[in-house]
Length: 316
Length: 293
Image 1: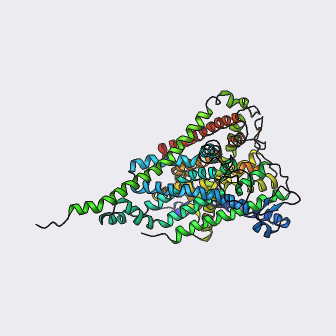
Image 2 (image 1 turned 120 degrees about the horizontal axis):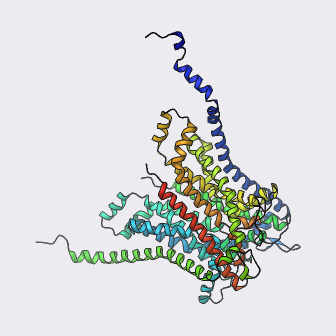
């Protein structure tokens, strides 16, 4: 069949061209969307920059009024005294270290033992029941844990330790540890589950008991993941606010006595912002210096966790 | 015939190790139970303390200096108002970021940087987000202690969680679906909008609802923003001051009168019921709509 010239002009190429003209709107969308989506992705970077710059600027103003040497070396934190105030971060740091230390004493052994049980001993069925329940523990708001520490754990502990104050480091430390158990358990379990079964079976075939397999084969192979989970747990405990603000007290004292009222970095920020420290006072700027300390510390722990899990991971 | 294996010796050798194994298995099991037991004790304590205080009046009353007249209405409504901002803002930003990272971004340093930045943001303590919100939203932008300022702060706080959940959901959509769509002549955005997103939506929603329930329970950033606890009216718009449930619970917990502890417990029960409700929706969506390819 012979084609006329008229027909020939409708080649595929031209049809595509014509279609493209019709789809001008579509083309615009194709061009626009990646850019819009990139903008949303940049928001996360802006958030980090926002945090960094607000902390830096306001901390800078704080250090114009208080010497950085005093901040780092003085052992007295007396921000409310207008005349003879003293801004030594040490008491807040020891308060934070105390509660974090106690939390780790609870969370690391219990969390690791749970991880070993879930990964090495538990049947698939019981794992499927236990894991979601543990996740509920992680999903409870921290203010609820604070209430629990103040109204249940502290009175309970006072029966055993009569000297224990209403506000102390011990009770919020323990409760914080309980809150962090699921995190240690699930991250460590992930690390242990990724150890291939062939290695376990090799050890079992040589006559090991399950305990020996867990402690001498699986744990060493999963060390990097487990260590990373500890780092993240520490970072979480350091940044935890409401439990220590409710049950830890507000006495910035340089002490290692867990039975007495202390104050953590986070609890100080809460105390200042719930009180009526006026905008522009030294006390107001001090929360940014404290926040900066907190931010740097948790960031270091998180980076360390990432470094450990990347650098020391065993590849199978 | 000489015995190749001395059974007695084997038993002798093994018994100690088997006992040790069983003993530690028991210890590990107890450790696992420990968390569950605490959960039960915590819930039991709170529910028994709340009994008698949790009634219709409690849900309908505003805060009061007298414990028997105190109610959580302002907080309950305030938490819903907070969601009016947090849900759309964090979803649009979070899902947008996830689509960009999974579908458009080239594998280069900039993409790696965004990804690392998101995982680091997830580790920043919530109280630091409060400081960010106080400086930028409350003071610099002059939004005051409003629903908007608190909502934007909370959106940034839960953003990393939503991004990671959405990324996982999008990654789980198999490539065959995308290729089939391209093969039919669809463009990239058409493929994402009509094929990838619908397939990923259950996963995205599940993760997002969990993130939003975190925003409802979060207290620390709002304390820093200076959100008040004692408010006897409801907000009329996103620029009004307001309060949320966790702030009221915090306030009641800190009061010296014994009765306020019961009020706090009643408040916690309401908060937990809201959270359980949201989590059930998430589980329902996951079970009902999650397709396995």
